[in-house]
Amino acid sequence: MNTHSPALENLPADNQLSSTNQTTPPTQTSDFTYDADATGNFGTYGGSYLPDFLVAPIAEVAAAYEEARNDPAFLSQYRELLQTYVGRPTLLYQAENLTEYVRSQTKTGHGARIFLKREDLNHSGAHKINHCLGEALLAKRMGKRKLIAETGAGQHGVALATAAALLGLECEIHMGRIDVEKQHANVMRMKLLGAQVVIVDAGGKSLKEAVDSAFAKYAENYHEMFFAIGSVVGPHPYPTMVRDFQKIIGEEARQQHLKMENRLPDAIVACVGGGSNAMGLFNAFLADPVDIYGVEPAGKGLETKEHAATLTLGTDGVLHGMRTLVLQDGDEPAAVHSIASGLDYPGVGPQHAHLAAAGRVNYASVTDAETLTAFQDLCRLEGIIPALESAHAIAFGMKLAASLEKTQTIIVNLSGRGDKDVEYVGQVLGI
Image (cartoon, rainbow, N blue to C red):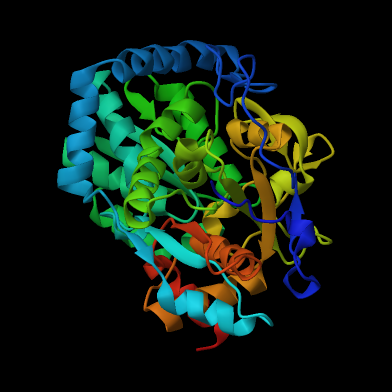
């Protein structure tokens, strides 16, 4: 039996983190589920909130996915590509140097062993390829000739362009001007892979506007296009579909840890923007006695308006076809900020909102400064350059590990590699 890690409010003062929903994981009962119902509602969150002209196209996707998810041939083809093309299973790596560093920084010498789920080793460099291949296979099954999507950090765009090239489909990626400038390397990769990149200059010129732009184009061309949403967000069936394509992460991690340690981990950690890498890891552990932590961007501080800590400070609202928690400015989604483009989003996947309300997952946040420090720590100590998104989870994981005993273990999802971030981080650090 695992010994649950302490609630974050009980951490020593020098390890204190901003967080919400710090409760003991409840036991599921027969009348409670962490999953969605037939209409895509996770409790009071989720569903499908669409203008009339998008109802039929999205219903078509829902029907096609329901058929595909029950087709052994489709699932077999998908799993085969994960193994032969993506390179799964990814490693569960014991970060001994990082663990010893954390222990050296504590007053007691305590500190859990840290394991990293190495999604950065996937072909194309992140977890995004897991669901992009699934969505591309579904698009081809539906007879669509073109994939269209949004991207923030560019990893979803790169992964979708990769899948499109493999399966002989066209690809169009919408990306905010700010993110284009921060993620120039990924823009070049998308173009080399044959994708058309549409630069969005509206509003905040970031992920929300990219989503809006891509949806508008899709609405005009849905007969030939498939909208490949890049996270567990949007109208039903996308939150469920993307999670299902990502759940391989947690299935592997659970099996690997059991094989290596002959028991479950004490805690698991992942960063949360929209929340796809996190749901991919969390899903396999929801019924287990394991503490689960999602880490949001506190940006320049929760006391400022320059953050994207939706689960910490958001309120109920409707965004991009789903009911979820949203950072709002009056009746509009608020302008948000994160040093990591992929977390720069004013909403969150509805299953995360449901898990927060149920108290099953603890949601915390770390600042840009903490993220940059963790980014450098992992580079220096393990020879691994993480994505800035993943560095949020590393930062929190280090603090959590410091509060636990040496006999305990945690898994941190290293959702992507940081090649895309090196130039930007160099500018920020002046190196």
